[in-house]
Amino acid sequence: MDVLKQRTITALILAPLAVATVLLTPTWLFALIVAALFLGVGWEWAQLAGVASRAGRLGVVGVGALLLALAWPLHGSVAAAWPIAAGLLWWLLALLWLRHFAWAAAPTRDNTAIKLAACAAAVVPAWLALMHLHAQAPHGPYWTLLAVMLVWAADTGAYFAGTRFGRSRFAPRISPNKTWAGVWGAFALAGVVALVGGWLLDWRDGWLAGLLGVALLSVVASIVGDLVESLLKRHANVKDSGSLFPGHGGLLDRADSLLAALPVFVAGKALLDLLRQS
Image: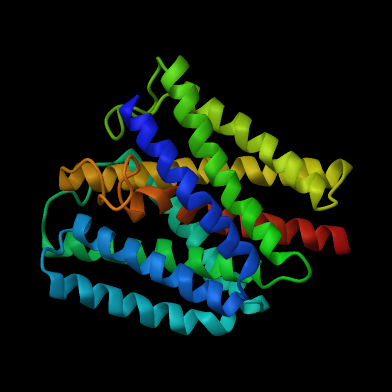
């Protein structure tokens, strides 16, 4: 109950700030705010990867800032599809890593480099996908909010369904607390959010069903993102990536699902948009 109370208080404080940031800031300012958060994710990922020194982690953050700056001109253009597609490919490869979870576990320089490359492959496409979505006229910020809320809903549904009904674990060697009940809870609540959000954004009939399909695929990706972070924490032998948010852990603990879900949602919505226009 103490953990639930901490999680609830933190969510009640952060959620309105996040919604206001998504809806009320221009894309360039939104990009800077999210870049700062994602660079914080990179800092924590580097620590899990075995970069022990502060100077080393600052170097990782610096490289990350350069990569985001180079990606910025692509947002809102067709060229954004390539980095986003690279992000999708990375998360497909991550499925193999989860299957062979002990790979790259040893604290060597080579394995640290592999994990830092994985960080870049996760963070940069997700950030660009979010900016690409936010910049779309006329309802980019609202679609961005829907994408974020899908992940929030999946996390919330998984937490409560898993806590109440969870018995059968689906990844006990990576994350013992993950259960199949949590997976179904994530699908259920995220599905409701997708249908309501799509309806409010004037998507109807078959297109709304298509959006539901994209949302559920995004939930699958969010679970993969969560498991990859759990794998990294297992390798580093830590419980959380940080302690910034009481009851929630660090920035990476909050963003892991989002990093994986965003490229899937943006790519899926783009495909539906093309079909609607044809």
